[in-house]
Amino acid sequence: MNTFGCILSSVDLRDYRLKRGLVDKKDIPDSYNINMLHRIKNQEDVSSCTAHALSSILEYHDNNVVTLSTNFIYGIRRKLYGMTGKGEQLRVALNISKDYGDPRKNLCNGNTEVDAVFDIAERAYEDQAVVDDAYKHRIKSYVKLSNDDEVKYAIMNYGPVLASIEWYLDNNYNPETHFIDTEKVSSKSYHAIVIYGWDEDGWLCQNSWGISWGNNGLFRIKYDYGLKEIYSVIDDENLSSDTDEVIKPANNKIIEFILKLINKIINWVLGR
Image 1: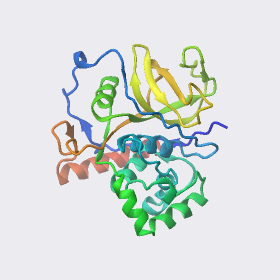
Image 2: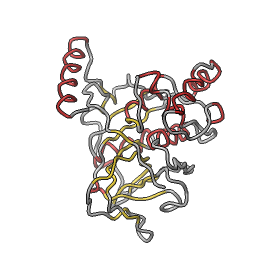
Image 3: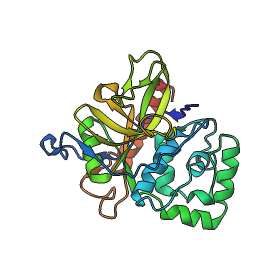
């Protein structure tokens, strides 16, 4: 059973972004492919695609020497943010990974749906050894990306990106081209994926539906398919949110207050 579970994040104008003018088109090659080693996960019938995609990226940054928990990222949001129900926002998962990290899978095991996953994650959180282990696998920061060129720059410089896409009822994996064929007939849900490269025709993506789906868990989408949300995960000692490659729009308390107010208005209008 192919399950989804990505929820659109609320609008936050305070997100870190790449500095304007940083990306130069002529420096971007026609194709690029990160060697992720492609440790394909399988969320099965649990609405935890966001946690699965993000934990794969965290494992990449740890050189794939550990297998990390998905239950922790998916389940600890109730305790930390008071969020319940199936599915998870990308930004919430990223904040968890930035502030707390993600423990090894054996310390918070399983692939569990709500409500049970909340209890599992919270019990793990009460164990100081688990908390300490999670912190070893935290990220430095994350950056919201705005266009295809920024996505490509981020993949080349920071590693695979976390993205969400709409999944349509007529989506069909084409085993010859490895593309998702669709006329975009009726959106079924949002789905979190990993983008690890590109070619002249589209994005190279990793799914979380096991190796029996797609090209051993991998697939492609064309550029005009459209990405809903895209975040670069930065986990490099020399590339923190304080570098001149990244800007934070809210750079003082007055601007922060104004942006928070605007955020509330926008999210109220959007119903998020």
